[in-house]
Image 1: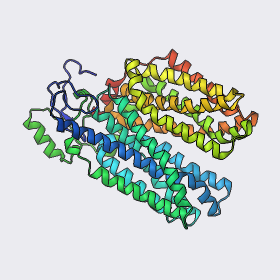
Image 2: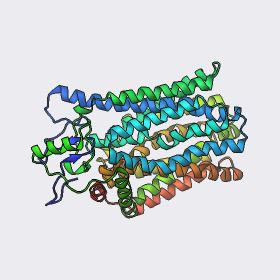
Image 3: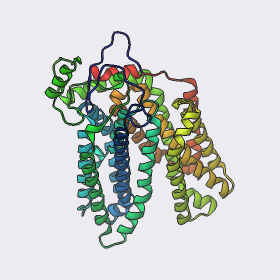
Image 4: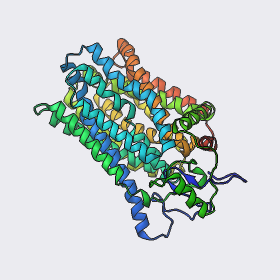
Length: 478
């Protein structure tokens, strides 16, 4: 994105320090450093990205230790199936309403502080879970995590702030790969701990400790060594604290010393800025981003329908036991991890056109769902399941990149938070639709998912959106 004639750079970036208004030399891919710059700068920038990858790994590693045990534990506390279902859905409902607010809040107060608050509050929630000896305490413990468990969204927004638009899909794919590795290893460790005396409480305590470790890692990040690689007009404007902790007054003095213009409008409270950004975001979504969010909802529901009765369908249709189904799931997850490494070559093949790659991955996903629903043999079902994890991993990364490309990285936290809210709606709808479809046939859920996927493909084909980055960038200057 380039600045329009006559537009001035504000010179300010929350959580990013001072940005010079002069043009920048060409950047080294994925590092945010100038080509030909000294090696140590590139090493420090790469180290920062690797630290963020580790944050994503630890986040899903800790969560995946506990999540498989939640339904068993709440039933052991004496909850009926209905109460257990209501308690389980409370997390998704909280995520539905908190995702956009927390993401917008991270745009206003900065990535560092919002990331730390979210991690620490999540750690508190899992610590309360480790002390939940009745259903009430169990439900109460899910509230902090339901509201503040947005570590991955804020981390993705931070990654988008740090790299060029061309590099962003590859970096997001690598981040998703690191996170998926944690999701693969977490259940193994959690299953081992659960077999010990007081296994669930021990597992929840270890999960809380992992989040505290993650908070310490974020606190120790080399924030002052970050070198940004995006164009000046891609960076948010505001009067918030700089990335490495400068106060507003110190930042303004430094900006004045460099001759950088600084906004002198009256300061607003953070929540007033959040509400102002949300009002602007609403018009952006209705005008430019509605296609992306509708496609995200349809594809999310389609894939969730497939996995909602995956083990049951394999058992009823092909006689595959739970253990074999678990091995198949692990194999599929491993291939999904590899998708992060294949994303770079694929994007080069597509000329860095994320929308086109998303369209083709959605066609592949819908076709695989249809083949799985109509499969007569186990070999076809297994092949479809394994390839499905690859296509969905590619699609998730592309749709995240499209949200940031069309909406602008200045409101990256808000856009990614809204995307998580859309996914939360899918989590509410998928179990209901799955139950209705299973009444018809065991093939019903993946068949319905294929139909929804093809609807998303038709919408994308008929409504190719134009970039709305400039409009999204204006949100932070309102």
